[in-house]
Structure formats: C-alpha cells, structure tokens
Length: 264
Ligand code: NAP
Ligand code: GCO
View 1 (tube, rainbow, N blue to C red):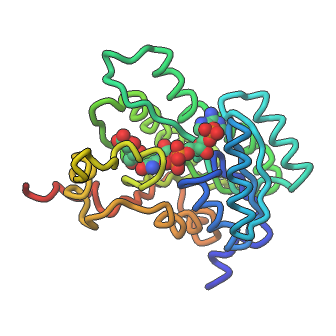
View 2 (view 1 turned 90 degrees about the horizontal axis):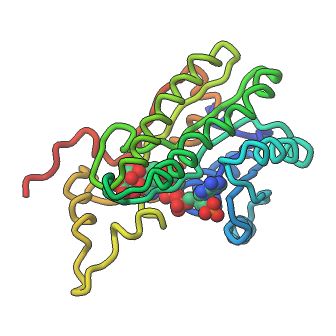
C-alpha cells in the first residue's frame, strides 16, 4: 500500500513553488521520495524558496524562469534534464490574480493574468509531454480554483483563466491519455496564503475582514484551508494510486462548492 503512494525515484517540477501552495506540494513530494525542481519569475523569490527548502532539509533546485516565456521554459527543461533528470511529475502551480472590476480593467491586465494562469501551463505542459511520451508516461497536475466553477466580482480575468485551465486539463487527458499520461487538476478552496492575505486583513477595529467572515459562513469546515491541506491530494494525483484517474478536477475546498452557505 505504501508503494502505491510512493514517489521514490521520481523528479517533480512544481512551478512557482517558493512558498504557498506550491511549496507545500513540493514538500509533500520530497517527503514521498521525489527530487524537487521549481521556478519563479524573480531571483529573490527563488532565493527565498531555496532557503525554505534548505531549512526543511529538502534538496531542491530552483531556477528563474517566467512560465509565459516559451523559449526560457524550453531552455529550463533542458537544464533540468541535464542537471536532475527527466521530469516525471509536472505541477502547474505558478499563478497570479488581479482583483479589478471588469469594466475598469485594462485588456493588458486581463491578458497578463490569462498569460500566467492559462498560457503558462500550456507552455510548460507542451514542453514536458514529448519526453513523458518517450519514457512511457507521466503525471501533470494543474492547480485550478473554485473560480474554475464560480465567478465573483473583480476576478473576471482569473476566473476566465482558471476555467480555461480546467478545460486544458481535460484536453491534455483526452489527447495524451493513450501514452499513459494522467492529467488532473486540484481545485483549492480559499487557502490562507500571500495571494489571499488581502481578503483576510484585520479591520481597523480589530474585527475580521468581511470577506473572511463570508468565506467562513460558506465553508462547512468553518475555516480557511491551509496549504498543507493540499499535500495528500497532490501526492495521490502524482502517484500510482491515480493511474486510472484522468481529466478530473479534485476540489479541496472544505465543502464550499457543495454548500448553499450558513443562514445569516
Ligand atoms: P502565491 O502565494 O501568490 O505564489 C505564487 C507563486 O507563483 C510565487 O512563487 C510566484 O513567484 C510564482 N509566479 C507568479 N507568476 C509567475 C510566472 N509568470 N512565472 C513563474 N512563477 C510565477 O500563490 P498561492 O496562493 O500559493 O497559489 C498558488 C496557485 O494556487 C496559483 O495558481 C493560484 O491561482 C492557485 N490557487 C490559490 C488559492 C488560494 O486561496 N491561495 C486557491 C485556489 C487556487 P514570482 O512572483 O517570483 O514569480
Ligand atoms: C479571490 C481569491 C480566490 C482564491 C481561489 C479560490 O479573490 O476570490 O483569490 O480566487 O484565490 O482561487 O479557489
């Protein structure tokens, strides 16, 4: 049974895994036996990640690479294969959000969010799939979102990108499942990371942010998720245990998507 969830001998590339959700997933993979590679778009973030991995006793390799830059991604993959080995597991985690009312959002701002959150996973997946085919298979995990299913004010670009990422996940599963590549998504609910910090900021009077209270009322678990809540589901989708799971979005949301919300 242990072997079913083991990642021993595997190389996992987790994009954007300097902290937050990506870091937690990469840490879980390291504890399951995988070699870890990650990239961020800024050197200072890569350095921050390397320090964190070292502190946790994890030998990770970090590189500066913007996932929207196709040539840079191809070069990085070549470097990874030279320095670490072929990529067995890819997690498209790198992402960004801009919370702006749609009618006030510049097309360039909308385009950048879609570039990072949707085109980036396309570029990185397109780069790794050929070598996965050559080696008899692989695992691709796309970090989707509740916004792959639901909209809300100010996140039109992000929801459009994450909705697209859900369908890209299903399409990679459809197009490459015959090569023993499983492509699935994880849809985190509201997770306490730097990305959601503005939604949890304490009010001047010390009370909870209205959005914070709103999420608590919408979550059966009555709490925000932690990045660590994603570790088990991520190991499942990267291991032999999920070899017949393909094109699935696994929501890890404390039950928000199942729940109408607590009566005020
Ligand atoms: P985060 O704290 O904002 O971290 C994002 C990471 O991605 C950073 O390391 C960042 O480093 C990197 N990154 C951003 N743009 C990049 C680019 N163009 N190329 C390479 N790396 C890039 O995010 P998080 O909250 O951990 O979320 C991680 C993923 O989960 C994202 O896809 C997010 O949309 C998704 N998600 C988050 C939540 C949540 O509640 N937190 C829920 C559902 C889904 P640099 O800035 O240095 O590039
Ligand atoms: C927001 C939040 C969400 C979460 C996550 C929910 O502004 O609504 O940032 O988008 O990050 O994607 O699953």
